Amino acid sequence: MTSTLTPMPLSSVHPTADSPWGTYLMQVDRVVPYLGHLARWVETLKRPKRALIVDVPIELDDGRVAHFEGFRVQHNLSRGPGKGGVRFHPDVTLEEVMALAAWMSVKNAAVNLPYGGAKGGIRVDPALLSRKELERMTRRYTSEIGIIIGPHSDIPAPDVNTNPQIMAWMMDTYSMNTGTTATGVVTGKPIHLGGSLGRVKATGRGVFVTGREAARRIDLELAGARVAVQGFGNVGSAAAELFNQAGSRIVAAQDHTGTIHNDRGFDMADLMAHVKEHGGVGGFKGAEPMKSEEFWDVACDILIPAALEGQITAERARRTKARLVLEGANGPTVPTADDILAERGILVVPDVICNAGGVTVSYFEWVQDFSSFFWTEDEINVRLDKIMIGALRRIWDTADRHRITLRTATFAVACERILTAREERGLYP
Image (cartoon, rainbow, N blue to C red):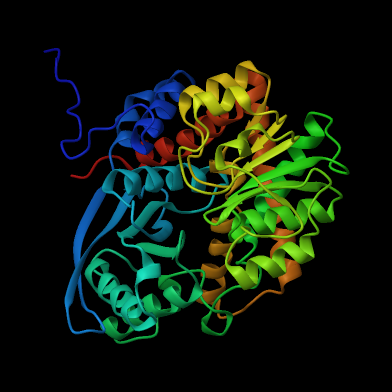
């Protein structure tokens, strides 16, 4: 008897084409022709394994009780425990966290880490909370999601507006609830609590390493190359410093405090000191301020979107003058913009390989925690570079063989690994 059943859509999410989850679904659809017999499992990729929504009530310093909505999504666990960050941001939604978890599945498989994909977040502006309120919120959230996280099941990490201190509170809360110090439950911790050297700048280093390899492929000399960076947090600033050390000029930068430009290039030491003192690039005296939207018109060779998702729209893709786009952020380019960049001959190194340096060093941290043996920063960087370069070359070979973009090639490599694991494990019961 032939079945006419068709997969039912997720009832709780109604994505648009340019929304995070809608973008991810389109990316999966584009890779189906390259999955061969594994395509029968593709619906596995379109559905999170588990999505948890939690209420996070805390007592504020003034005695009032405030409630925040928190999420933890495990997209796929076929290749290992869930792995992915936790973000605190006023725009966090279930759909966004689903997409970020799915991209983590692809990212971890792309660099062949023994992880599945997960992500978490709380809808909150942490700048409006005191330190004690932030701690109470973090600890309550950790307790609420404690039923699904653990060193062998799901390992959170820092993301937007979270940091080593947040991870220390999460690790301590989980440890208190389980009665044992479980350093491996999170990564991105302070060094003296089981954190890894090289973790803070790992994502930015991965952007640089993959960017350096891509620049060689298109005969773009890094010495003298003009670089524009959107988002100047840990990722954007670390990548900018490394490109500057390679001889590139950082000519434009944008973050929540403003947009600045200097075609001669910034003095990076002065800019980093300014950012440390003032919390962002806005007001830097070594550059000219410019309107936010003008950032996309800056004459540059390399564009690094390292802020939030959905920043490179179709209209902005038509305007950019870059030859190379390095996605430091997760999901910064919508599918229509991706097509325009490809048509214009602009090479995009996609997020799921470009910014995988962070999760790779998170993996190193996790391994070091279990062994209680820690590596030097030089050892970390050598291992990171080797994994990133090897993964990118495998992806590039796939792209050349099928004559497809690096993004589709990355999804092809990663999804084949995920679905092979799914097929070999089978369905239970």
